[in-house]
Image (cartoon, rainbow, N blue to C red; front, side, top):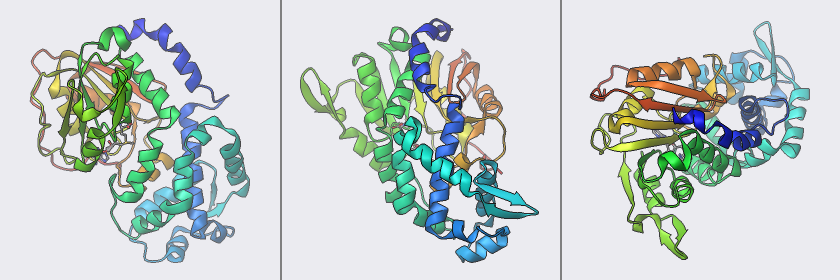
Length: 366
Ligand SMILES: C[S@@+](CC[C@H](N)C(=O)[O-])C[C@H]1O[C@@H](n2cnc3c(N)ncnc32)[C@H](O)[C@@H]1O
C-alpha cells in the first residue's frame, strides 16, 4: 500500500503533532474538551454547587427543567473520568486542583492555545447552548453559535497541519496529483483550498457538504492562483454538491466516479455513519482511497469529546474497533489507522455493492 512508502515523509508532521510532551494527542484533546465543558458548568454556577457532593438529580434540579437527564449523566460521568469531578457513593464533587491544572495548560500548552476558540466559545456563548440542549433544545452544525465557532476553529494551524498529514497518509502528491477527489464535509472553504494548494491545483475536486449554506460559503471562498484572487466556484477543476445529512438520498455522484475521498472531522457529526461510509465507497472507483480523520476512542465508553459534540448537535465518536467494522461493512478491506485520529482505506471490491440507503434505526452511542 502507498501508505508504507510515505512513512518517512510524514515523520516530520507526526513529530510536530506529537509536540505534546508525554501526553498522547487524543488525551490532550480530551483535556481541552474537559476544560471547555467545565468552563460551561462554571458559568452556570454548577461548579460552585459541586463544592459539596451532589447526586445527578440535585444537579438537574439546580440547572432546572432538564429534559436530557441521560446527557447530563454522561457529562458528569465523562468529567469524572477526566478527574474534573470526583465521584463517591453516587455523588459528584468538583476537583478544583484538576481544574486549576487545566487552566494552567490553557496558558502554556500549544494544543490548548490552538483550540482557544473552542474554549472561549464555551466561556462566552456555548454555555447557554449547553443549558438549552440539556433542557431539550436541538442544535446542529449550522446553528449560528456552532457554525461561527467552527468557521473560526477550522482555520487553526492544528487543523491545517492535520489535513496535510491526512493527505500524506493517503499517498501524498505522488499518488493524489491528477486524481478526482470527493471532499465529503468540505466545510466553509479552507479545506478545499488546502487540498488544491497541496496538489498544486492538479486534481479535480468535488466539494460536498450537508448544508446548502455551508456549500454556498465554500463556493465563495477566495484562493490565490496564478497571481490572481479567485472564488473557488470559478475554478474549472472544482465542483460542488449538497448531500443529505440523513443519508436517505444517495449522494448526487455516480458509482465508481472518484479516485479518492477525503473526509476530515465529519463522521462523528453524522447520525448514520455506516450509511455515510457506504455512500462514500459507492462513489469511489475500485482501488480508490478513503482518507478519513476523526478521533478514535480506545474504549467504547462515553468521553468528554462525545459529550462536547452532542452538545453541538453532533452524534458521537467511535472506537477503532467500531471504525474497522464500519469500513469492513462498507467494502473497505485494506485499512490502516494512525495516531488514533487518522484512517486510510482502499476500496478493493471490483463490483461494488449498491450503497445501503435503507436503515432501520440510528447508529447511535447508546
Ligand atoms: C468541523 S467541520 C469540518 C469541515 C471540514 N472538513 C473542515 O475541516 O474544514 C464538520 C463538518 O461536518 C458537517 N456536518 C455537521 N453535521 C453533520 C451531519 N449531521 N451530517 C453530516 N455532516 C455534518 C459540517 O457540515 C461540516 O462540514
